[in-house]
Image (cartoon, rainbow, N blue to C red; front, side, top):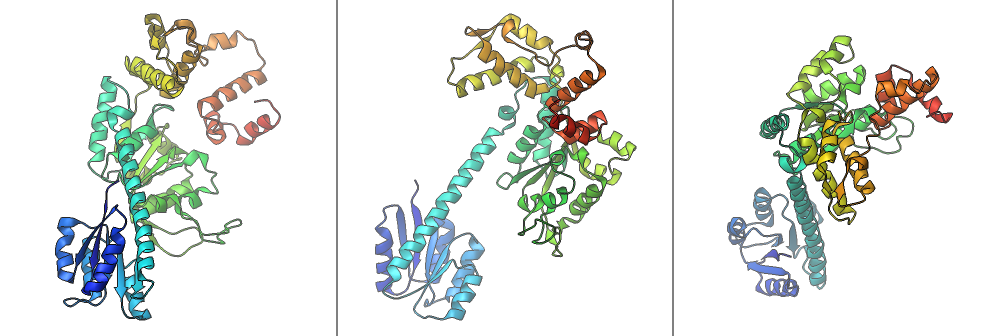
Length: 448
């Protein structure tokens, strides 16, 4: 653990010695004394302290003047004011201007300073841990680490992502379910200039229509029944970072209008509130629908479509990525073996041929499930074709050979769509053009 550098700014030699000696009792502290405000200010840039204790009455500058210079240099730098006068108005004014604490020169000063510095150090350690975690996340989402592939279509995606990280342009990601839209969105965020700020996700299709506005913009206490306290929304949570709107094509026209205004004006109000809240977020959207077709059908606003289009990235289905299938299969297999303390497995040539022939309607997500199951089923260090089970590969002819009733066929179709779309009842109802109440009823009756 690195040492905590503490500046003690104090013109009284006795107090300076007492404070410095007391803080130096912790070997993790590196203490330096300054007897003027100017000498402290001149050392900020070169020595970059973590904490400063500042005497309010100095021979060359007032405590307020020194505090102002320090906060101009680094507004996050904790400053503790040490004063021989108990003046509440002065203390309040200093705290307003960025001081973290105000301590009187009395018999209790050593204990007060020790405890205050201890709290600041804990906050500094927490800040360093968060910074380290964010750096690790950034490394995790380096393009070639987060997205496995060498095919020409994936190389084109890497090229577009490189362009996306250089500016704050809105990015619209399209592609079939399971192609990795969220992974691409995260990789763009964590490689952009906003990578130290939040990455916030809203899955539009998973939020009930009557709650989506509150989810996005927050609400004030008492805004509606059940709003027992004020709650910030995703726009507020993502401020200075990235807001990822997944399944944007499922948003209602009414909500689309509110989203358009928030993006255009860069401000919004919470549900039930009047205060205008400024917003600085980068927008990334994703959909498995063709939004232009939705515009033509009247399901999606044309003005919002062009506002969100930005830099379009269309992810290829796995069946169009050739040998990437085998690279991904090995990646998933190695990860699964490591996580489960299993010996490493390899794919036999015939198993590779079987994987390459399958169309993967569930794309990368389906391949991961297939490979993990095959690792469990394998009886040797090499996965064989019989270990690979394509559960969703029944052809239409195979299905028709079962000679089921129309009701049974309907159940199978609905079950298949629920599996494909991660049990998202609202989305399945739209895809099959049936009422969501039909699916809920069938679930309740044990038919699904």
